[in-house]
Length: 323
Image 1 (cartoon, one colour):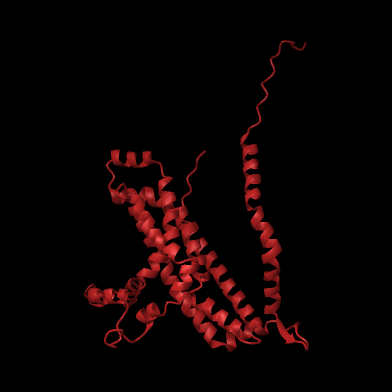
Image 2 (cartoon, rainbow, N blue to C red):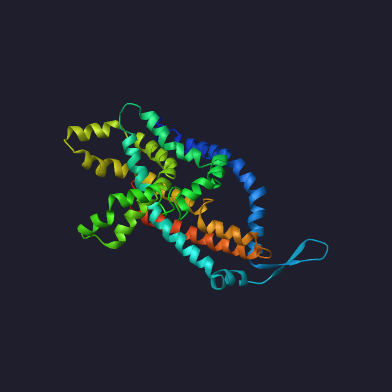
């Protein structure tokens, strides 16, 4: 006999988390929709034409205009095996950027940690370190690149005052510090010595390219709960231990983001030697297709480096769970 008074189990309420995640996903697509529309309408046809040109030969027709003729990988072979200057410029540029990128990320992290401390005039100091980013954009960057006096002072082999060939201010700083003598007494390898001297010689460039990374690191540092640091102080942890066991793991996702950003920014700057050389080739008659091949070679190398950097750093990234 069936018991008529059996109490039915309460129906579980549908979790709202899935619905909230779906709404967030739709909102994300809504915000990136303008970019996707512009990319499909404007940039995608340009990318397709660039790929087509890199595998083609341009034939100028009478009366104006041109037609393309498929030539396979001839343009890529010319860029890699015929034009030795491109390979040399590419190798030198990549080598220089491999040394610059760690210096920029480390410097920006160091300054972000300092600027995150409680001190008088903290907002002013943050603005000062971000000023080079503003100066290095738009019209100011164009004026700076065409500043003949600055170019003469920093790049010319002759001096303004006595013609003895003065060095730039940063190089004079490295010379005044006599780092070669210091590292020689410390029995440090020549490669490390050259790296440190090169960083000091390019200190202005490193500072000017670290503003955005500093802001990203500052945002990551401010997202760390102060309760964690209070617990460390109660346990008697030193500042050095707190940094390596709390701050560094919590900021590691920002290290990955800033490294990828620095790689992309360094390889796509207007002052990049490879970009300038490709633009020079593009300006020559009947060399548009070769410059397109050089651009795609450069793009694939940048993509490969980003993949290598991501694979190397991702294994050490700590993601805090919030559930």
